[in-house]
Image (cartoon, rainbow, N blue to C red; front, side, top):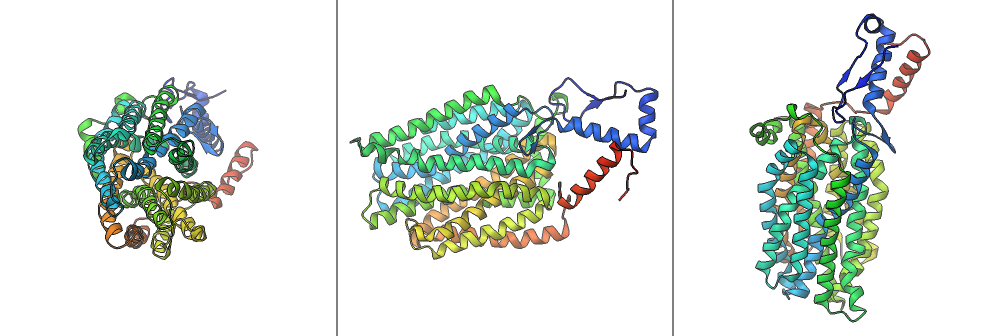
Length: 499
């Protein structure tokens, strides 16, 4: 009765021992069918448990995953929410003229991203050294502090100082969330994990647009002034960050996927992001992150500014404009939720570079089509907004799945942090020059800029797919039937085909 037991270390992924190493185990090693059964038993042990359609990595529990989903909901609410909510501060609290809001918003985002760029790599190294959980808690609390202070700013410079505090937390949270998304699933379920996580991300963005952004308008109907409404909106966001920190402390898995003795040295981890860029697929994932993360700001900041400006032309105040456009955002995000599982399923069943190329086709087409939009408040324009949601959402999922597949496990946090830094650089460029183009050329300009970049990246991705395709699909449909036949053959004592 030969059997397999895992080590007591709950995070020791794949490290197993054979208690019976005598004659019984020798038979297993010498017999082809028994060796196949042993392999299956080890696979079964390594599969650990399943959460819905996702096979979890050894040592990861369903509570860990549910906590991850909740923190993803709050984190993306806060990551995408500040650009949207800050536009309200610029117009209502600080009284920035309408023709200058794009430039001021771009400056705020620019300097915030400078801080994030400087801190992404150190936080990634810290996550690989001490674990993901403490880094996330530090980051979400810093974001909450930034939210809590922002509505009390009296000048643009003071608001900038509070944005810097927020950016410190953003660097820790964005990298850690992406790393956890790749830590928790097995390889064959990575795409589905990214897809289901994105549902929580989308729900978080919907919560900002449909609930938080509407607070000033709802309070105004009850006679509350615009300043008080803005403070209430931001303080509720701050409280959500504190709640997320408490839940993370209780529910996220401690440590890292490797034992302490196997963790990389700090000096090596600091260089790992650039060192791994020699892998063309990781380099491509970095370039994809440059576009994918900037999508959050481009959609959140410039679409909202566009809606506010168009609302003024229609006689609406900023609160009414944001509330009306919030309905469009809810429609966009509902489409994102419906398509997320399908995208995750596809990512796990084709070569990850193929999925990346499909995402770029959708993304470039969606952003370039924004040049045809007449008004973001016109609901007849919804097909264009659906296309941009498909493109940007699929782009984020495929980029994260690709870098998670290729990154060495003991350096995963540092490599994904480098990916986040590339995303921050993308936000930096698109928010700075996109803000200038928004005011100078028109509200469509930042979107067309992003679409042009993604079109160039599409060509590069096709070249890498041909020259260096990397691993095959982790869970292709045409192999699933063959695997099932092999399992049946082993367990029913039938001959096993070598094909």
